[in-house]
Amino acid sequence: GENVEQHPSTLSVQEGDSAVIKCTYSDSASNYFPWYKQELGKRPQLIIDIRSNVGEKKDQRIAVTLNKTAKHFSLHITETQPEDSAVYFCAASTGPGYALNFGKGTSLLVTP
Amino acid sequence: DGGITQSPKYLFRKEGQNVTLSCEQNLNHDAMYWYRQDPGQGLRLIYYSQIVNDFQKGDIAEGYSVSREKKESFPLTVTSAQKNPTAFYLCASRPPNPGEKLFFGSGTQLSVL
Image (cartoon, rainbow over all chains, first blue to last red; front, side, top):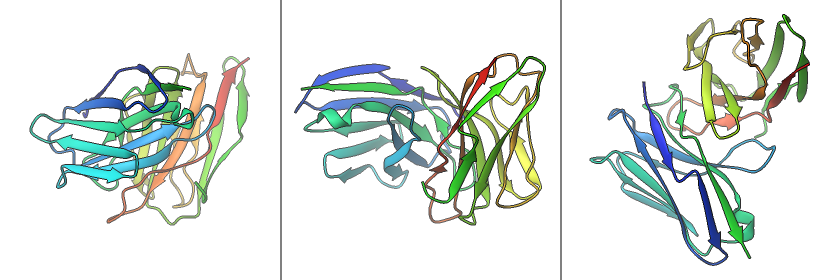
């Protein structure tokens, strides 16, 4: 089955700096790559997603890039703020109805 | 997300006991999922169902069972065979094409007495 690797497991940045989280996947049939943010004790919330026919997608301070050849995708957060502190998960899926396979998460801490 | 409800929020299990976690959705989604979350382990797939009366094992199905008798409901039973059941359990549902976003319930924290 699909194996999703995520790095780093923890990341600490100063407010205003950028944060980058990277993921790799194993199944070349995967075509949907979402990123979720989870605050302590709460459910994961989708923050951005990308499909395999697109190389980059941006939403305000958040961007995701996808390299299908290398089978990796990355989350970029610019101008980080303390409220960005949370655990971030990447995931991959081969299509609707199929399961999302998640990475192990990155705990991001943004210090003022 | 609105429309998918998990209960109870907290659950305690005694040795040798089976317990059932409830998951109900009114989003008219065909696909439903159960994930287990442990600290530092991410979300691991237990079972999923793409349609009523059908379900598939995920990566860590041993010690768990599910049923999908109704589109709205996908209960998860943690059996006595699951020796380390303490975890946060998340139920999710997903619409068919074109949307692929996963909608999560608020989770159930299961602990062993």
